[in-house]
Length: 592
Image 1 (cartoon, rainbow, N blue to C red):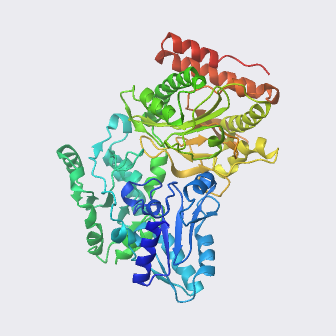
Image 2 (image 1 turned 180 degrees about the vertical axis):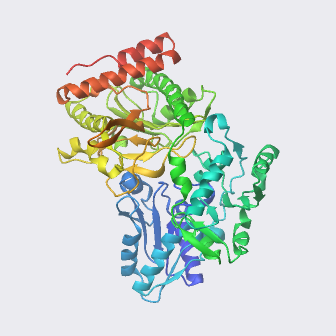
Image 3 (image 1 turned 60 degrees about the vertical axis):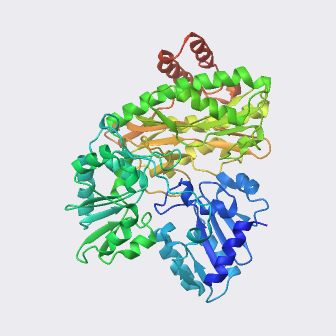
């Protein structure tokens, strides 16, 4: 029996609740959250970054996307939860369809309104009305039954120096307020943690792998207020904030503060990010729109771009040492998937600017590589051997940039099928890397570049091809993306995106190849307008032992050789003689 699930049902009966929806997020709509808000994990045992639990008095289901299907099947076994497979983050409508069959008219559906955005809560209210359900937004089970709940993190906030950020705080505040006023508002409430971190050049360690501090920020022409636990603000940070006329209030005072806003004020809210609880607190006029900070943050300045380039060089050198170590030890049968992550952290930590990993390493050997977001545990970790495919998806946080790279390598004796599949994925990866496209192009228009070689053989992958990457911030950020679903945001110079097609064969292996790309200006024409293209930032060779060169065009062969020549040139200054020899061999030219 899942004791935690039964405790929740007891509370539901006591409160007159017939069903509850539990997202895996926090009051800031974060993708990755601190342990304090992992109530969904506590109830179900599922730990993926995307997943929504729904519990009735006699049934429980978990909705997640294809990145987590295999992981969820493992983690939910014996939990009392049934896995529901959905498209990427498209679960709300299907949840309501499921509930329409499981509960009855006039039954009460409950949520913690602090964990749902205004937009989500509004959709839920509408769908409840259509089905005759009652919606309660003040159900807080974590506060009542989670007895061993971790404390809210209290790590100190710290200043991200302008030498790395490339823009001072006053400039960012001014640019943001200009957008706010253009929207017809005179103030703004910012709730997304990475937006606050970027806007104030302030970082923290409240969330694993993402250097943010848990806070809210309110700004008008007359007032600037940061809501943050006082224990996180030392004298240096307090002085820094004061120099920018930013007052500090306790994190929990946000609702009281908003409740006292002048009814004549007009505040800008992002309905997809501000919680329903906070949005409903405000009595003043509201202007709804996408937070202007998201777009401003998504375009990197020259200092940030140069920082990305330097970070990629140090990261590439660390990966040379890591993969040399893997090659030297895999055949001995003495290292496992967790050992690879630990060794990777050791190698990256040799950089003075390293501040931890940017996500939990995905190190999948053989069939584990087919679990898209696999996390090795002491119980599950496979011991590496001298053959088979190893997928390593890893990244780091440096003061001057964030990295995210995936390489799939053979540990020996690659099969013809493995080489064929690897080359299909690589061909799509290369096609996207060399794409040229008109100004105004969106990511959905480019997604097929990466998928076409797989599509031609009736194969595909369920996750997106590209996500934005923050600068010493979240490894996943918007506003842009490259995926099959429509995102109207056009790519513009200065945006950074991943390029990561993959192929996953359950029970056999997974293949993914990922580089980080920078959008840059391309050809300019009189007849057809201006074009854009990509600069590859990531620096580490592809495993040429897995390339079936007969499948490549002359253009693709040249592209690989040119990339490897750049990798060798850029990484060599960071390496000793043994490492230089190893990298030189990995970057040797191939022929078609």
